[in-house]
Length: 338
Image (cartoon, rainbow, N blue to C red; front, side):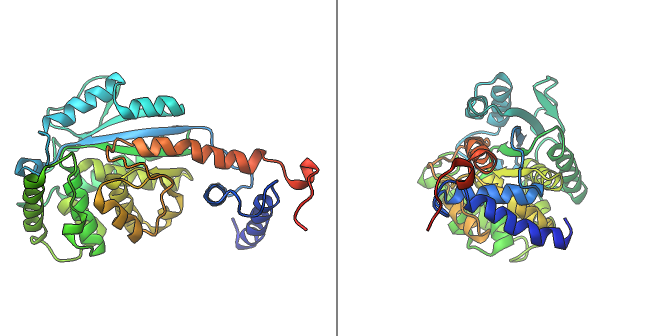
C-alpha cells in the first residue's frame, strides 16, 4: 500500500468494524484480531480458509546433562507418533481442519524415510551447550533458510508452528534470558515434569551454561550458542510465513522463544504474529510480557506440539468471518446508536 492508500484504509477498516450490528467494541479481541488480519493482507475483505500446522522436531545435546524427565529417544518416538496420527497435535489439527506437516530438523537416528515426515535434518541433534555452542553458524543459517522456505510453502492464509525436542525448554530459557535479560531462574520450569531434585539440577546446569557467554547477546549469536535446530527452523519458518503475508499462530513457550528470535532478526515479522495461548510453563508469561503480547487463550496447557496454536485457529477464522459476513446496521435495517 502507498501512504495515501494506507491513510484511507484505516478509517475504512474502523468504519466496517464499528458499524456491525453490535455496540462499538463489543466483540473485544475478536475485533482486534480481524483488524490485524486485514492489515496484513491489505484488504477490507481478508481471506482465512486454510491453515497448516508444521511440527519441527530435533534433539538437544543438553539433554545428556539430565535437564529433562524423559530420555532423548522420546523425540524420535514422538515423531513416529505424529506420523501415525496419534498425538494431541494430530487430534487438534483434525478437529480444526488443519493440514499437519512433520519436519525432522535434527533428530537422533538419521532420516525417517517415510512420506509422513519431511527430512530436513541439519545434524543429528545439537552439541551440549553447557560445554560450547549448540551449533555452528553455518548450521544456524542452514536451519533458518530451510525454515523460511517451509513457512512460505503451500497455499495457506495462516501457518501454525509447533515443536518436539527433549531438552528444548532449557534451550528456550537460555534464549529468552540472553535476549531479554530476564533472570534465568525465573525462566526455568519443570518442562516435561521434573521433580524438585531434577529442577534444581536443571537450574544448576543452565546457570553454568549461561556463564559461558556475555550477559546479553544478539539474536543470531544466541541462536547459535543455545538454540535447537527445531527452534532455529521454526524461527525461519515464521519469517518466511510473515514475508508471504500469512498470519503466524505462535504456540507456547518454545514457539514464543522462536518468535522472539524471529522478531529480533526482522522486527516487521511481529505484525503477522498471533500468540495463541499462555503456557503453564512459568517463563512463558514473562516472555509474553517482554513481547508485549496478549495471548488468545489460557488453558493451563504445557504440552507444546503446536496444540495451543491449533486451538486458536477457529478464533482466527471467526474473526475474519465476522468482518466479512456480519451485517452492518444499514444492511440489517437495525437502528444504530443514538
